[in-house]
Length: 479
Image 1: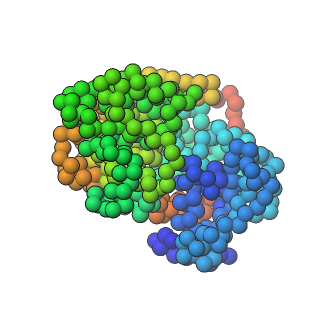
Image 2: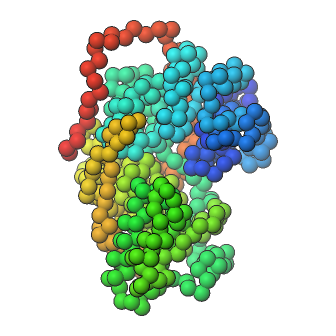
């Protein structure tokens, strides 16, 4: 239980209707939502429209209160789930609101999944506020999201970049809205450093690698989709191996915890064959099996570095897991990953994006946390689709990633460990707060401020349609 905020009696709590992935499943959104519910159950009552594709429990109702009580020490939590296909419909949300009478709605995930709710905002916000834990991968600030942000009363940005984007897009419409920085938080008792002599870790390592136990491990843990840049990651590793004597290169290994072949990514078996098999046939180890959180934490502890070169990344939850486990990171400087590297501005403060310097992806600031080995994008191209017409694709050079690998390899194991532990120390500190409890505290603070200031939406709004001149650039592109 989060003890930073006192326990409120059940009948004194505000009730929040959460709409996102079913908190019983294992998606990233569900994991974050579950942590928020668990650590705020003493302060809020929760109802969830629990989404899934073709939900097998559609039409049922589940009371998770006793389960939450047992896991938190709260003795009177209230957590109710209504499984839905997708994220519901206008009729289902009207029914849940009428029956449960929530004090606010909370949304998590891409805004396009909630179009029907934003289209109902005039109806909903006359009675209760709409809140949104949101994220956006990159600039230019998405003016095509303006209508979604306008429909919200509280915008909680997962990254500092997202908070800046919310404010830039809304402009003068930002007045009377609440903005909060609420980065992802995980349980630091699950993702944590382990003693290299720990028997559980030794057994895991022996079972995972068999007789071929490496001396240096690079870990990739994410989906096999194009923006994750897995072939570039593999090529950077191949080039790194080529800088070593053969006997030392043979003691290095890259673990890919991902699907080997997908239509949304590529055939990683073929990539491995082309880059490695003739010279380094054992350099790549695929990990396909489903791992428990304990097993995944063991993998982070086995690794000497976690690597993520994604060209678009709103946050990068596996980077957070690695940092909490005390593992150094190599990451592309883009999106929310730059938050986790703790870049410092000219005053020595943790970098906060602004319209003048909206991102550090150009390397405006070079000083960063000791645990981070950043790779700066060298190509920023505008990509898009009809729903999202423009967004930067921040691509870094695999050659630069190779240099970071060499840099880490040349550190002693003790120095790598020291730097990794510095990262964990910062991640669990109040400044960063990448823990479940810090995340819950920020959510509680955000809602308490909202409830103390919120006013119902006017019954109507007068709009001069002739004033609209288009959605134009509102921050610097050259900086």
